[in-house]
Image (cartoon, rainbow, N blue to C red; front, side, top):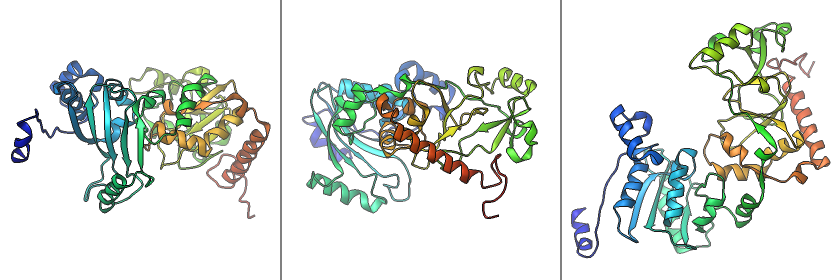
Length: 384
């Protein structure tokens, strides 16, 4: 490498480094404390610390190139890093590789170049290879994009638009219409109360059962056991509530007092609303949460609507919402902040036709759910 860089060093200051990737959870105490002290805004991983350090080492208009995990582009942990990149510097180019972009490894990688300093209106070049599986696809598709800007996976974007999107993700493929909606629309959190916390028993083996393991008469707001939304497999509109949680006074006292537990705020007990699964297989799925239930962190829920519940449920299960969620956070974890950020228009969700369709979808999904023994509402199989 020294041989290749020596000619450049006659005219430029050249630095090449191979910084480690290490999340904060894997740092020892000394390193963790040092990073928190000196790089508190980017302390999530050593690679993010090195990014800011390298920019600081550069002179005015310095050109910097990186290969890092692409988690910094989307997840909440790195929001301050994204703002530093797009507000104080300029992304000149970026290639986002597919998960299996390297032979023998499955890692979320991107490679990109920055210019130190902010250049207003600069439209960087972006190549999205995430739709092309396999290491053998990456280099040919990247070269094809560089040769043909109309290939469909090459994009030009002004990073200023990223700042208009909640969380400032590096969503270079977002349309101008999408960005305008984020600038002008009201978020769904303006109309609905999102739960700030979920119930955590800290001992599910003791406090959580399947609904068929307890007496049906003891499973209600007045009984020991209460239906418990815990996320579950892909399913829309209704279902996946096949667990119950011990809601007796001693159990709730344990949740409130134990350091690793959490007791759901009593204003949210038994509330009607919408629940969903926070870990997805790629597509989000929202379901009606009947009154009389509580929920845990794997099944976060939304209650207290100032809009028709059915309209909001219809929006969340639409292809439009999926497009927004894919931009807010294109990972397998659908965070509450991503759901809260959805721009919404009240008029759309007051449409009676939409509400009737959603109600019918919920009814049919409930019939299907109640056709099997895992449902508390099961009476007999529909074939009998």
